[in-house]
Amino acid sequence: MGGISTIILNTLYMLLLTLVMAAPLGVAAAVYLVEYARQGPLVRVLRLGTETLAGIPSIIFGLFGMLFFVNMLHFGFGLLSGCLTLTLMILPTIVRTSEEALKSVPKSLREGSLALGATKLKTIVRVVLPAAAPGITTGLILGIGRAVGETAALLFTMGSDYKAAKGLFSSARVLSAHVYLLFAEGISFDRAFSTATVLIAVVLAFNLLAKLLVRRMGRNGAGA
Amino acid sequence: MSEREISNERNTAMDGVCPKIDVRNLDLWYGETQALKKVSLSVEPNTVTALIGPSGCGKSTFLRVLDRMNDLIDGVRTEGRVLYDGKDIFADIDVIELRKKVGMVFQKPNPFPMSIYDNVAYGPRVHGVKERRLLDEIVERSLANAALLDEVKDRLTKPALGLSGGQQQRLCIARVLAVEPDVLLMDEPTSALDPISTAKIESLLDELKRRYTIVIVTHNMQQAGRVSDTTGFFLQGELVEYAPTREIFFKPRDVRTENYISGRFG
Image 1 (cartoon, each protein chain N blue to C red):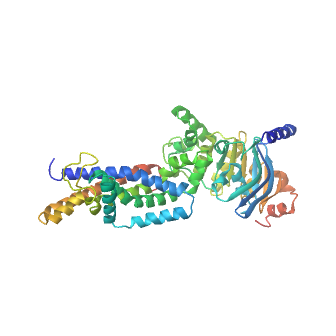
Image 2: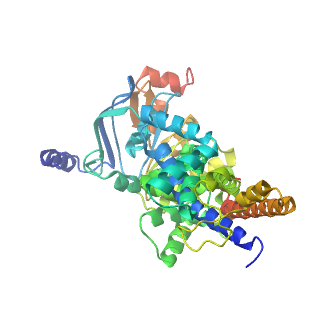
Image 3: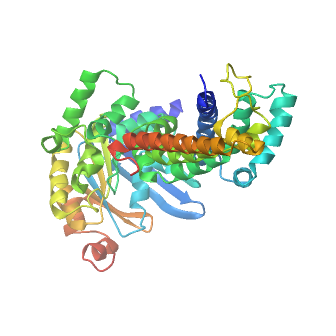
């Protein structure tokens, strides 16, 4: 494998790993906040917290990730540390958008399901989440978009080895970091720009894929 | 609890017929506001009972007590007893079981954003029916009983939201029938529909009452007159009068009922 193929591969690894960690966690948190938590001071503090975290510069997340995952937990510079950091970084976005998507599911649908004798959990899993799926997916895309464009947080946590990652702990360079590093070297501007083009193509491909998924989910009239 | 049950059985034994639903001295509060005051009524099996009254009189609230949908609202407190088949719905019967037996059709059609088939199969599936053939059978029967099968049989896999309002409401009725309830609660089921769809649902009620006990809340007094055997008139949380529909309309005992029926308020 030559050129930036390894780096594209690393980027895909990173996106998948981050999504696998952030999506269930974020959606579960949103379900808890909207459907289960008693609306009171605790939830208000949690909401304020999520909103604040959503606005914090990524470099701060990078520093935290380095201290916590890389050093304290001894994960070292690698995919795992990087993706955990990214997960923390994009969770607020995912939680917020999923919350809005869940809230926009009409009460009449929940009542319809409960009135048929479905439990609350079944109602959430079979009616509410599918109805909220398009909105939740939008949130995931936003989160992933933020992750794929991330440089600062990753340089501190994931390292910059341009070889394809062999495991969770191997250092890996992703496209955005590659652009930055090429640019910083000052002698490979053209390569930095071509990498940037590839990066945009990757983001576009990801978005189209997600759109397609949303459309398939929405086939039965959910959302759009 | 056993003592209570015994006394229940004695009551029903003495009465001869066991009412499907028996409500005694029901009070209900939303926080500090009392929405129902000492309501008592009993509903005989295989009848249609209409609840009428001006907006905010508590008739919908009362209906929602019967399948415990008010549990979903914070700050609702009830006192008094509600018996379904002689069992206390707050104590002797699980809420899931109750809602299976006492189905509800809402004011606005609320089909799920799924296919027509999946909407009707939803209830049975939730209650553990997996076998495809059995589901097919239930869906077909329920749609037929809701007088919708002929209109949708060629597009069962199409989204339910593509149906017209009247069809959606009949789909919701089919969805309820699919879990095999024996009581149907209907909260102004035709108020969002055009006259033709309304007529269809009203004639459906006549069919359904052979197999089900129906309690219907309605704003429309002609409707109450057309479809019901018994009518209850609610006013400001009180059940003012509860009698055979004929009596309510032609010789009401309470002057407030008479005023309402003759259109002096409401």
